[in-house]
Length: 165
Image (cartoon, rainbow, N blue to C red; front, top):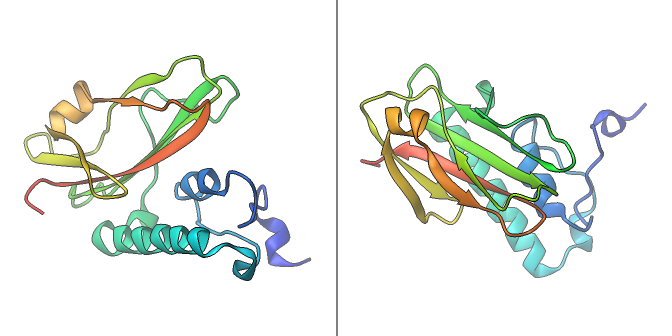
């Protein structure tokens, strides 16, 4: 049996909605199947951006060694939201989070993050580097930050980093 048959869901590069695939598997072992020669130049460039970003997050925070459920978000389920965090619990220097809307009627949620240094100031950055929030570890845990996802089925990845970086 080929190893690719053991990949849950067998997400293909050329699938409709492939960006949601790559965002969600960032919380597991990021493997995408398919033939990159079948992608448009634009899609190939976007794929490269995700791959480079995930590699950078691994080199900065060792995200692949850590994975936690995102507080207040359940398992992936129709009509709900779900999410994960990959925060380095040893250094408390940061990591990534992923948040997903699966057909929920709610377009907005408050996102909180655990396992950070309570007094350190962190920035929450979108994958394009835009600062979404600047809060202490304690504020990220207790208050969080608001997030809107307008598309019924969508998701976003964020970096959590020391504000001095």
